[in-house]
Each structure stands twice: as structure tokens, then as C-alpha cells.
Image 1: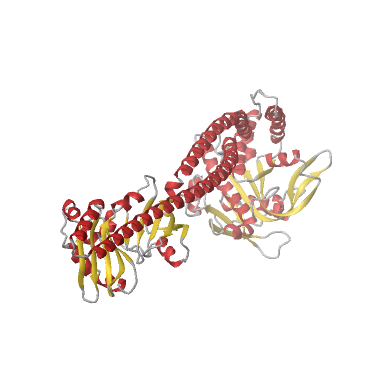
Image 2: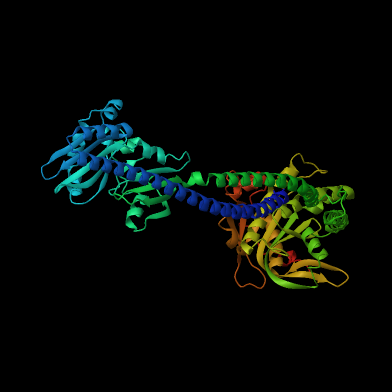
Length: 625
């Protein structure tokens, strides 16, 4: 039985799944896109606001420090840098500003520090040596030189002090000397100002992109430079003071980034937030929608599955019923339980089965008298009065000494004997796609190639030879256990010829017979009659031999003169089909020559010097052919 490749249930499930997936998917996509846009706008506004707040806090902090230090320096200058009042003012300043580490005024012309104020408490509490101030000054001597010419800088002191320490470097002129004011202080207050407590992260860099304040102290301590970071690069490439962009970091992730340039010392504050964190609520919403879609799809599949059963089960029963009809069982035991199209089809199917059963009975009855293929064509109206020329292979077989055998049997015994024999022989014809044209007493006439050919005249001829070899073996099986007057040993002769014939229905509109006529038929009959004098059982003409010579072993017999032909025609005795695998008694283990065939069948070897194959040629011509 053929398997269903695409069941109805599967088709319905696929269709419903596609429709639901497309509709729910489209809805989810639209909603998610709208939500993501709203979320993005909100995230950008929040990030920009937080950045502005952090930048404002940083600018206020740095401006306050600078103003306080400059006020202190002015006060010290007024009181005299070496006076007790100056020292008292410095101590008071450090008392009030404990995050201040040192204030240094360096004379670039002399290379000496005119004033050096150190907050001892700062260095003691942080367990660092105040001499690191000098180290820092030496490391950044180039910036001090530039500051003396009017530039201002904020530098990262963390790599030297191992603390979050910043240094503001400003030009300072006093009494005509070009001096530089270096303010070293803790960046903890700025770090606290940048800590928003949210998923956003803020940091600050100077004009070179050096990190000054960052939540990751390892970057500050290492003196990291972020000038290659897309956000930092964008901030210095554009002349605007503030902007919000989206960029891709080195880790491949996307970030929202905002920057804000400060009005002092070319500083810039940045605030970033990872896009996947921003869109996590959107992603969560999408996941929930997907789960909902899967749940709806699952319930839909269950519903469609059980609904499809109401269609697929009856259809499956109809399929099984069609298999029964194919096997020839036309009476179907089907019940129509629905009033829909399936129920109507079921009732019609049962009715059709009954009609086929009646027709098959008629065909079986009809087929007992004529060939089954011809009966089917006749019942379909495909056979009409008239004929057509075809190249066919004609077969004749005859029982040797049938008259003598029948004289020793009762009439009913003759009929039983012939029925048994004919059944075996006809089966060989049918199994090789041949057609029994007629029974002529004990003789059988068969045709290969009419009314239906198996593809070409060569294949039809080969099938005919195969049938004859099957008959040889079937006759041996028939003769097994036989002997005596009541069960005599049977010997037959087979003649095969290929050629053009007229095939069609012969007769009248009230009674007709499908047959083939022509010289090819006469020569096949003539060939069959030559088996007895030649001591053979299967003879084929030269016409047939040319079509099957690649497949058979033969022995050439004496040529025969045929009426109407100038030259004698060659005749061949069939020995075997050596490559056959489906013919009992033939194939690789079959006979290799006619001597083995005669021994196998009990046929005496004739004296060919006394054989006249042209004797009584007219005797073998079928009357009316």
C-alpha cells in the first residue's frame, strides 16, 4: 500500500501554524518595534540628563577647587609667603579641604618651587609619601612648561599616588615671574558625583583622552587612554559641546553614549549605558509574546489534530477500501456516519464497489471464453470491427500423437487431461504477457505484440521464447509420475515466427473474434510441424532468431522452403537462455546443446540424412489463414 507523504492533519497543522505565526509574529514585531523606539527615546533622554548632571557636578567641583586655591594664593601673597599668617591660612585651608593633597607654585624660569604647601594629614591618612609630589612634577614637566605659556591642564595623578588623584595645572603670574600653579587633590568627590546608582556609567577624560575619573579604578591607575573609543573620538571630532550617539564598543556590544565638554581645561564627561540593558524589558516582552504565541500554536495544533481526525480517519478507511478493490474485493463494509462530503463519498464508494463486483463477475465469465486482455478492451469499447497491421510474434504448440492418446481415454478423461495440460500452458503464456489467440483441438495459438505490445517487437519475441522454455519445464512437471495408457507421457512441439500480420476483430457485428492473420501466422504453424522430423521441441524462424540471438543458445536446423519465397529459410532449435534467472530449468544450469535437450525430454536423435523438411508443406497450413 502506498504511504501518504503529506497527511491531511499535517497540512492543516502547517497551514494554521503559518497563519498564526505570521499574524502573531507581525503583531509582536510591530509592538516590539514601537516599544523599542519609545524605550530608546527614554534611554537617550535619561542618559543625556544623567550626563549633563555629572558634567555640571564635575565643573562645579573643579571650579570650586580652583577658586578656593586661587583665593588662598592671593591671601598668602598679600600676607607674605613666609609669614606666620600665610602658614596659618594654608593650614586652615587644608583643614577645611581634606581632599586637597598639595599646592605647588613652580617658577619655570628658575626651575624651583617658590611655594610648596603639603597637606600632611592627606598623605598620612592615605599612607603615601609626600615626596611623590616631586615625582609627579618631574614626570609631567612638559605639561608644566606648556602651562607657563598659557595652557591649562587636568592630569591623572593616580598612577603615581596609587589613589584617585587629579592635578590641575594653571599658569600663574606673580611679580613678573612666569609661574605654574599645580593643584593636587583627591578625585573621590568627583567619583561620587559620577555614581548615579543606575545602569549608566560616567567617566571623565582630559584633552588627550586620558582617563581622569572612572568607576573602574584599574583604568585610572593604569593611566588608560580612551582616545580611540568611538564615543571619545566623536566628542573631539565634532565642535559641539554636547551630544547623544549610539556606538559599538570593542567588545562588539552597542552602547548609548552622551558627552558634555566642560568650560575649563578641555575636559569632557561621558555617560554610557549598554543597549542590551536598555532593551532588556523589550526583549523580555518579546519573549513573553513568543511564549504566548507558542502556547496558542500548541493549543491550535491540538485542536486541528483532533479535527483533522474527523477527515483523515474516513479518508484512511476509503484508502483501505481502495486497496481491497485493487485486490479484487469489491464488496466493502463501510458505514457513512457523517452528512458531509466525506459521508457522500463513502456511500458512493460502496456503490461503486458493488458495480465493480458485478462487472468483474461478468468479465470473469467472459474471460473464460476469450483472452482476459481482449475481454477488458472489449468491455471498455476499445475494440471495433476492423484491423491494423502489426509486427508480432506468433506461437503454435501441438501435442504429439494426440489422436492415438485420446483413443485410449474416455471422453471425460480426454477433457480432464486437456484442461490440466492447457491450464499449465496458458499460464506460461499469461506470465510472459502473451495472448492466447485460440485453441485448435490440442493445439494452442498464442500472440505476443497484439493487442498490446510490451514496448518493442524484440521484447515481444523474447517473451515468446521465454514462454516456450517455461512450457518445456511445466510439461516435465506435468509428466512426472505419468505413464501407461490412462496417463501417457506427453510430448509437444512449439513453433515461433515473427513478422507482420493483420490484427483485429474478424466476424460480424453480432459475432466476432479477435485474431491475427497473414503469412507470418502460416509460417509459425509450418515451423511447429517441423519439430517431429527434426527431433526438437522448440523451433524459431530466422526472423525471430535475429531479434533474440543475444539471449539464447540455439542450434541451426536444415533450412525449409516456404511457399512464396525464393530462398530456403533458416530454422533454429532453442536450447537455453543462459542468462535467465526466472525460468525453471533454464539459465546457467540449463542444457548446453540439443543433445542434452533430447536426453532431458526423451526425444530420439533423428537421422538428418533421411529428413525432408519440405515434405507435405501444404499439410501444415491452417485453413482460412
